[in-house]
Structure formats: C-alpha cells, structure tokens
Amino acid sequence: MKRRTFLVRSLSLLAMSTTGVALSGCGFQLRGLDQQALGFDTLDLNAPPTAFTDELKRRLNSDGVTLTDDAPLRLNVGSTEVKDVALGGGDLNYEEVELNLAVPFSVQRSSDDAYVLDQQVIEVVTTYQASDGNLLVRDDLRSQAVEALQRDAIRQLLERLSALDRL
Image 1: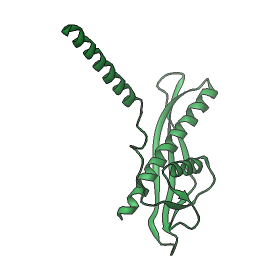
Image 2: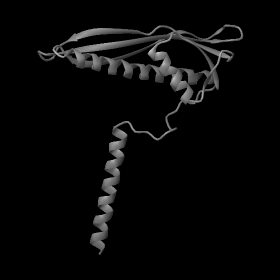
Image 3: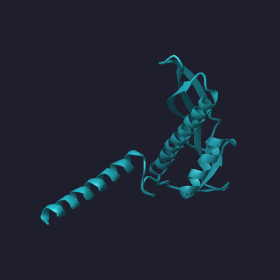
C-alpha cells in the first residue's frame, strides 16, 4: 500500500510540475498579475489613426484608462516607423531580416501644455528568417513580427507611463 501511495503521489507531483513548467514556458500568466498600475484613470490620446494606435487604445481601455479630451494628461504619439534591414542569408534559400520599430511620444499636462515627459522614442528590434521563393509566407512572417514589435513597444510605453505617478 505504501509503495502504491508513493507512486501515485510521485506521478501526480510530476504531472503538476510538468504542467506548471509548460504553462510558464508558453507565456501563460494569470489575469491581473502583469497589468501596469497606471497612476491615472483618464488620458487624452493624440495619435494618428494606425494599427499601433488601435492596439494602444485597446490596451489602455483594458487597463482601466478612459480616453477623453478633458483628461489632465495628454499622450502625444507620433507616426510609427518600421525599417527592414537585410542581414544576409544563412542558407541558400533563406534570408534573415531585422525589423526596427520606432515610436516617438511625449506627455503633456492639458492645463498649461507643459511637458511631463519630453519627446522620447521607443525603439524595438526583432529578426525573422524568410524564404526568397515563397512571398506569401514572407509577408505573413513580416506582419507577425510587426505585430509582436507593436505589442512590445506598447508594453514599454505603458511602463514609462506608469512611472509618471512617481515623478
């Protein structure tokens, strides 16, 4: 009996630890543990209509920030710039491409237009390998890489905004 109990407990412990490692390795997080604690509830967003702006609005709304014109702070986001840099191919049919995303932004007080954060630029970089022969897959890989860069840039932007209440 004791041996069977030991085996059952050992196997269940192994299964739980394997599940925990697998979930942490795939990026799984419990809801609410990684949310930014922004020091404000409302924000005025001044940004051009782009996919980056749409994702930023969605993320701010999910963090509990209401976007309104009469907020005490104004977030100015400039046009995002994506640059492709060919790094060369490791294989005959594949080329490694580096993507750079630059997002200029600043934060102003709405009452007197004074800058709380002067213009700064968030720069994020990633690489992907693309096949020269398959252009459809190449475009899909590029768009997935741009989306990942946008999410990373938004995360960095929210980290900088969360530091505003400590200034």
